[in-house]
Image (cartoon, rainbow, N blue to C red; front, side, top):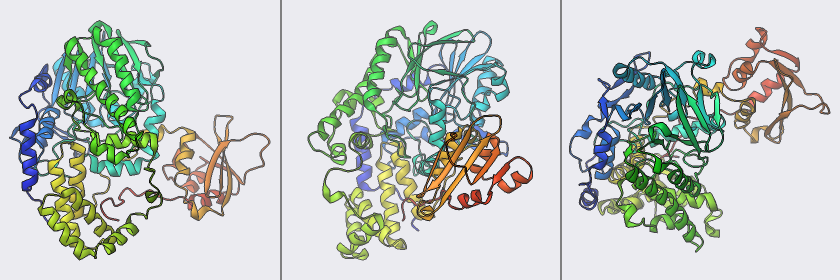
Length: 631
């Protein structure tokens, strides 16, 4: 396979144009990102208990150099900012750990200890961050934890800062928005395998760090690769204006469901005049639909909640900070920052709706839409993580779905069959490659990527097409301002050259599996039923949970597994299993041998135990290594 190349003349020229046209003389963000610096973790390497590196800040030291031609200068600037690492003072009694994971961990000093906001992704990085704080501020106990929302980079490291025993003893309350547990678990389990595989592309997991590889994800450098954990919340926030006092710290909450996460909240520290915006206002255009996959977010309510935050809190705040990036100080400046963020999401929403109501499709709107000059010239609105292009398509998808209304696209062939027909129609693979090389030399990389994709899907063994496609995706990555686009392009090139990297990160950590409710356990099983193989199957099993009066029934028919609570008027099941909720989870989700559990007396059976064996036989296994750039 081909090796990596330098930037082509057209990409180099495009990147040089960015350097000339954007306001690089505005260095306020660097002043803000450096403000309050206390100390860095040195060396910036975090290891797990086996000695494996799960985080390495030093891998990004190349960003100290001048921007090379292989990186968009705007992305290089953003990457320098998010790579800044260490302990920072935000205001009196509020500190942040930055640059030790994709997200920030905020530490608020209380009367007797500290309250942790969003303890990163991994136990290891969270513990390292808390250790850095304690080295410089004293060994204060953790007296509370707040999860601002339901994404794993905001709760996964919780067992690096506290323990289940501390929480159970009432020494460390865990506060989260209503709906947190449901959404946190579902996102990481239901479509977790597919999301994790695509996240390997989104965050450039296998890419070397450097000017030819990963330079950052726009929101942070990348994701840590340690062990994610979860401790269930003890207190749920359910309405705006709700105030909770933890260790002498009074915190007022603003509910913002449906914004950056389905379950999310901002919060205000009145006595410190400090406002935390969770992940609703960061120094980038965020995702309305992440490239790894997720539910489409609502920019309309996002914009409205930002207006509410401005009206409710901005005039009473001296600093605004978030769980990514750096703070903004001064009432006037933070109000303008929040207003600009509000205008960004509102504008994209309204202009997309205006265009779609004139008959434009998502891809057409994304190609034509332009931001107002004031938004275009603000660094905080640039698409380092989300992009105008894929966010506009997400808005269209939210309202109109996948279909663009043209009957010609209503019943298209699937990718492989479509590719074969395209290639045949264009004169065969050799002819397509000849024309693709000409387009490549002309710098028309978007078109080259599209037509070579047909060749690869029609003829996966065509090494010439794959080599040229790798070169093409590489050039698209070099020119991208968006960190996740760059990673996707470069990961595509990497896998075309080296084969699949699979899913390098943990997809469903034990703590997340343990948080599945009984309903979610059966949902997770239902999602694995191989429908066609189970069309003719009819299996009825009851599940009696020890210590409860509830009997849950699963019924497989027509390839669908349904589940519901048993009522008195139902006919008897073919088998009844009596077991604890933990053993139910072990048998159905974690794959523990049921026969051994029965022999050990953990599970009691009444009826035909073979019915469960039959049911399990219809379950399919997810594939964490599925192909992306090849069929």
